[in-house]
Amino acid sequence: MSQTEFKIPIIDLTRQYKSIRVMIREAIDNVFDSADFILGPAVESFEKEIGAYCECNYAVGVASGTDALLLALLSLGIEPGDEVITTPFTFIATASAICHAGARPVFVDIDPNTFNIDADAIESSLNSKTKAILPVHLFGQPAEMQKIILLAQMYDLVVIEDAAQSLGARFNGKPVGSLGDAGILSFFPSKTLGGYGDGGAIITNRHDVAETVDILRRQGGRVKYIHDRVGYNSRLDSLQAAMLQVKLRYLDHWVDSRRIVARKYTELLRDFDFILPVEQSSKRHAYNQYSILVPERRDELQQYLRKCGIQTMIYYPKGLHAQPAFSHLGYSPEHFPNTETVCNRIISLPCFPEMEIEEIETVAQALKSFYR
Ligand SMILES: *Cc1c(COP(=O)(O)O)cnc(C)c1O
Image (cartoon, rainbow, N blue to C red):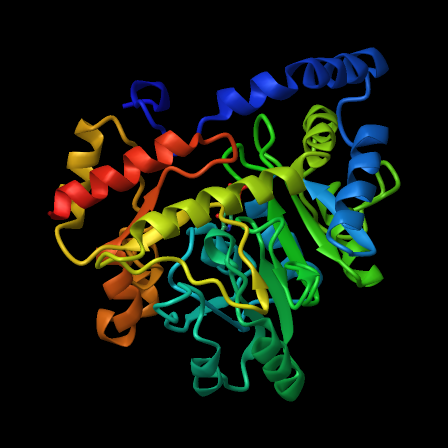
């Protein structure tokens, strides 16, 4: 079923587009008039603004969030033989980027309340090959950055934050992605700052990282036809940058609206047997997803909601430790009891800035009638 076949889709990008259509069209026109389609002034201008938004000295636009992960790892010197600590409960790109860099992903189970890597369980997985920790701020919920950065300092590790789902979230007042050595963003359409196609960025305060990523994304050299190293073709295109710059102006407003949607859900679902997203005082959740744990019959619930015209998603049905792609890592499910439980009980509800109160009420009502 496509998004439009649901009365209440998980995200409705058409509503948002209607509200900014004129400005997006104008931005597209400007790019066509300039005839600069790859990198160029539109990308530089967007990089300045997204960097400033993230309170980072540098932002480097690349072709996708997946590429941002790979180039961040490479620019921080991750290489074959290295181990990188991450979570098994994330989108596959987090771990496949580690493999593409030649390193080995080492999974550490999650905290079942926040769905993020259990920072207290990291230390026992460290060894002399460990070079980096790659926490993911999942669904908009910041990971335990204070503990993670402390560990990294103690063991001389680099920290790369996967903030693909969490633009607009803050940890102790600071934008996620700005706390480690580098952070990565995705502009995939359904992300909180979504483009109209693929795109991503690396944000960092380290000049050396920004410079290396810039070289890597343009075939390994800044001077045409002089290549300092073997690089990639991974550039943010000017159209995406120009459209994203328009949308960036509304980002804080959209995150506030997502938080209002989340608060309404929490108010309506509180007294039932669901585990709801946690709000902690040190963290500002950006609610790219509103994901809950249900007590039982999750798949049946999803079918029921579908019949009611309500679209939901299972992010994620399987931990990465159990994916065929990572079978060579030799993990077994017993090592990840929290991830296993969460995979079986989680469901993500419709959540987007333009959602109407009545729609939130309809979803909450349907959930309650299913379990009654
Ligand atoms: C979306 C996402 C990515 C990858 O971003 P793309 O732009 O789709 O390549 C990486 N990590 C996480 C956690 C994501 O949600």
